[in-house]
Amino acid sequence: MLLRQMKYFMAVVDCNSFTEAAERCYISQSAISQQIQALERELGVELIHRENRRFSLTPTGQYFYAHGKAVLEQVDELVRETKRLGVDAGPQLRIGYLRCYSGLELHQAVADFSRAYPEVAISIVNGTHEELYDLLRSGGVDIVLNDQRRAFSDAYVNFELMQCGCYAEISANNPLSREAYLQIEALKRLPCILITSQEQQNAEQEYYQNTLGFGGSYLFADNLEEGRLLVASNRGFLPIESLGTLPPVGASIRRLPVYQGGQQLRRNYCVFWRKDKTNAYIQDFANILQRLMPPQDTTSRQG
Image (cartoon, rainbow, N blue to C red; front, side, top):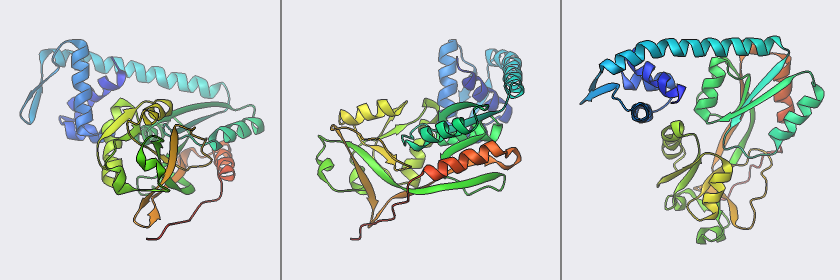
């Protein structure tokens, strides 16, 4: 049983709405419903009785809600106390980065920062855009390397790194791999492979489909290695952004720029941190990472 599934269940009961609970938890309504159904399957009982657009708690659900609340409060207290002990033990920097990131600059920035500040304990976690945003908002990390999907907020320092070009990694066995670049329309005939956690699959698919314009079907992988194995087996294409220096992909995969009309599709990447948590360590790490980023490529193809 996942604590996150318990939190989703509590949110639905507290809000008396799947829609409002999904907004509070930063996932889609279908995802929160699927997670609660998974929780019910694991427990082997019905927690929520669904009837058309309405629902009610079963007696078992009422019991689980009452006692689960206490369990989650104990977990939250455990997390707070653990974090407090970590802070008291000495200075630290908690970094979050995108699960789909594969550039080399982050590794070098961590090494350079650690050499400059050996007294600082560094911890690193990866996640999807929404998972990183939630961690930053709740204080679970100090700084995140993330793509921009929202308007900049005055509550955060929005430290822009670069606007980078979008690429697609595709099997060398696919006929499209012989092209110099790929139009986004051509990619709609292939499954799009996304690197994401199970809970964030719907949110990631909605963004790539509705905002970026990647159509067709979708496959999901937990990490880049798994995603690239799917590419190598010609199961689909993997969208990649040139955020920094990308490692070579090998002979079985080609990495081609993705165009929309006459220009390469581009996205904005930043490091974010809360203004009320600003300190010298966070600012210096952001500066180190920015200095390591290569000059931006602004080329485009007309016609």
